[in-house]
Length: 598
Image (cartoon, rainbow, N blue to C red; front, top):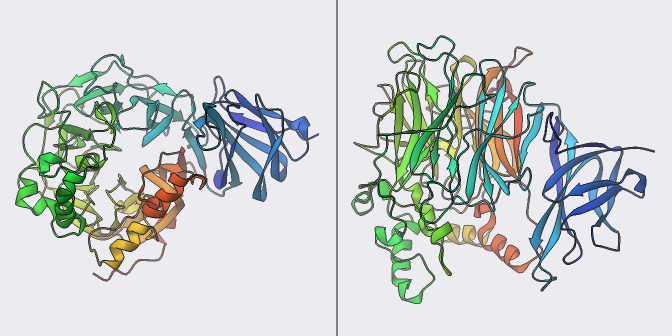
């Protein structure tokens, strides 16, 4: 008799996946119509003595003593036994049970149990899964942020959302802690708890997120070793908590006043694309003229919004949307501004209409354009006790700024690496330099060799071995979806409908002037990421990478098949899990340098 070794949600101790495994294959099944809302029983092959019960809204990893390619299962309420077969035998399987409406086959039955299977293979590098969506009381985990503390512990932060993954869903800021290099993680806890009934905006529930952590040095003149956790509420105000015990406990949240330029009465919740002169937020025949005008100006790359008088004139007035990072802040080490804390931020002039302001027929176009914004920084010279607003996108703006992270260069300058608009403008990352400790930045410029998917994506940049820079981000592949083929056939220069796939780490040996080395980490669907550079217990320089990973969706209904055919990977998918991985910096630096034809 071979009993399975089970990993899953546990009371106390560590939670998450067993260490040292990477996803290998994904498959889906349905329970019988209306069944499987509580649990499913599964066993390997024909050996029912190894039965395992997996409850709804949880994930369980199972190690069978003998590798199998087939498992049998039975959802609660079913009378028949079914089976799932994957391509190759494996010792490690995981199963997640959740509810979903199966409208085409189960009309009138309500929700039905949905099974997501994954096979896992052993790796030769440290890796684990700290967070899995539809688990631990939340529908979705997004926006990873990783911090390695002075003690060597790792803190993994996430936005925990419910009942869905919308940017306007109720969101908690949560954290897990690892003391063994990211192999296992503590139970989930809230890092900045708040009453959700308070401070709602535009009819949406309270959203706590956009965390940008930093730990003060042990020689800091104020609060040595303190971990600062600046974050946003409702993407309209900045708040902060701190920890003086290495992330075990957190202070009461407090608001940071005087560092935004918002209307105290609140944002304009109904501002849409008409703010930019286009009535294109709904499917309406009377607006076809505006659609054509919009496509002419942006869809075909004839106008750079940040260098258009018409568009740039809208970058003024009260901020409608504010963000920090993600994924982190920094404390300056150089002598001139030593110990200053610099928190990267951004702001825009349209919030988007998703969530409480949604209506039938509404398109998500205005949501894309809260990326049309400018950067700013929060500065503190007393260890986070008081704050002021540093640069705020004034002067020459170049290509603006959005989600961003700063690094300190050898000469004490700060380099900002930012997500770009990538919606009608060039789909490349942008960078800017500050020579005065974040008080001001020069205009942002495109970075050849660092691509963006359509509408951009967050990335992470850190200083590592020998002062070299390392950057993590999807490296989107050109596909054959209808929109991609259409834009290529029409010789559109600034639009390619690539998506968030191919998590990659780049290296720069010339302080961000070029990024000739790159190493693929995950060729599948990925998204946001966060890195830390440190020396591991074996005294090797490594990168800790925490990133969003999404399983492929099944091609089993007309809408999904049509969406993939038209949009390909440019449809932003919900993260299935966060993956932590340790990467030797030598492996990235030894990758073949890229030769760019520019």
